[in-house]
Image 1 (cartoon, rainbow, N blue to C red):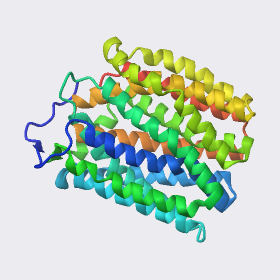
Image 2: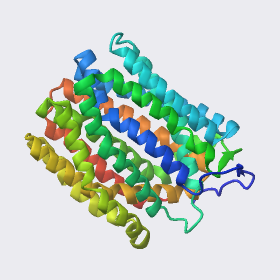
Image 3: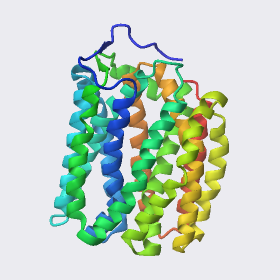
Length: 392
């Protein structure tokens, strides 16, 4: 355990409040999740369409990660000064600018790099206050299994709608109408947080403490678990959609496969959160073993139905990993100087993401087989187990 939260930290109850507990966070996540699920699966393909280069996709994402790393501490200063709601709303506006720059890149490709800058800064503006608010919203048992599972249900609902709707919109109308719709959803997503009951200001924030924690030997396993999580995200979030698209060559089919896979996991998530709170986080180990085999199997599947089955199987068992992993993170954050802890988290995640993107891009240059690329994802997944053994 590290430092308790500073007693001087300010939490203002705003009047009149419309939402209590996690409601505002869930609602904000619904709009953000719907908007991003409409396009996130197709962003790598959009970059491929513009540039004709797979390697450029990974350079784009590496550049985006770099800007998260560069901006996270300065943005934390703004969170401390102006509060979580305003900064999170500004993050939603900046996400809208990110999508606008993507849209401009179709005719002027250099805007891709402006989009990467805007997206990286967006992450700091949005996720620092969001994770902070999610941590302090817990007022019951200090456990986050059911809260994380409900958040994941929100994401899964948007994942049911987003990819299939996005695929059909792209095929019928193109990228421009889709991106314009998402810009509106991003702006709306910032509004619910103004109507919840918590506004955090005045948190303790020390650059020296953050650096000390990042190099602290006792935290190595925790940082390794986060690095593994980001490596897995790079493989499943970038390489896997490319693999599916190269197999089916169809936006609609890609969207249907991803949305259909999300459907099969919905029931499990609801029960899993309560099970995590009762049984502990050890099911994470079971989930990582099952899903590692799933990831390794993917390089041998090429038919649309096979791709659907393997993605559905992953969605069904992925919650055995993501729910206990998320719950463990928030429980550890609850004991810490929270804003500093969130800065450290984003730094480690996105530095790891930058390295992972450059590595996978290099593997594509070297024409390494898909099997070895997916082996990286399985390795990252297994590393997430270290969060259970960490001493932070």
